[in-house]
Length: 387
Image (cartoon, rainbow, N blue to C red; front, side, top):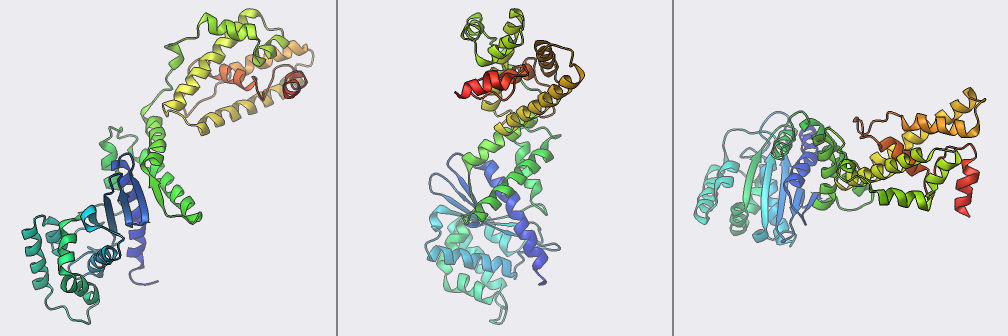
């Protein structure tokens, strides 16, 4: 392993949290990339580009006055401009370091903004490094940028900023998250969730032999779900604000939806069927609103259904063994009662009333019922529904 290998690895590991920081600060139409436009790149809808190089060291400042990290960075930027990869007028050049040191050349260049300040800063660079020989490891890069391409180097400096941060880049991301009014108790969890998603997404893209680019829209879709998951301590009962009307309930009853037929098959009383229809409608409203608001996603909804199906299967088997003396209708009623009373958490929270019972009725409904209450439900409803 080379002597600089730990620093190189640390630099690579900075890229994911730096990309996360960029995505959190970006806006619609933006694209953040890794190893496409620099270590981390940002392309906005109006054509502006930010190219960021991330330098890391396990011990000291990785961009000191005579470091190859510093001068190779400027060399590469100038080469990219000359090759047409970057437009100096439309590009912001960022050098990010995980370690800070005594103020030096990189700080002076970063502080220069006007043409006069840039000119003075570059002259100071030439004076400070006047003793660099052609045998020095930075000579090739320094000479090309400062001596051979002085005018272009000055243009880059006009758009250049040096930034320092934490060892692994996490502090900067946590700071951005705080600005989004996230509770301190959830900061680290949200950070890890988003970091893991980006890491997995980048790996997936690379494995598909594509450039590692993530759009703001794609990230925002995921971020909304993650933020809502931690911001919302409870699952909001949207159905309580707009309960089903008598017309809605009557419509399900008169049309004899498949789940209603399943309840009739076990001879459930009309009042209990009306209650079941109410559960079905309430659960449907909440499920749709939770997904739309980003409180849950399809994965969470699918997991809920999977768990409920597993419980139904187990209870059905147990009732058939322990209650052989009951009629098929009585067994079905007992199974329905046990399932409706099931205590099933969603994201660690208890859902509003009607959610579990209503979801069971959804699973018993058309077009493809996945469960039933009567022992012959598959022959009576599932097979019939396929014809």
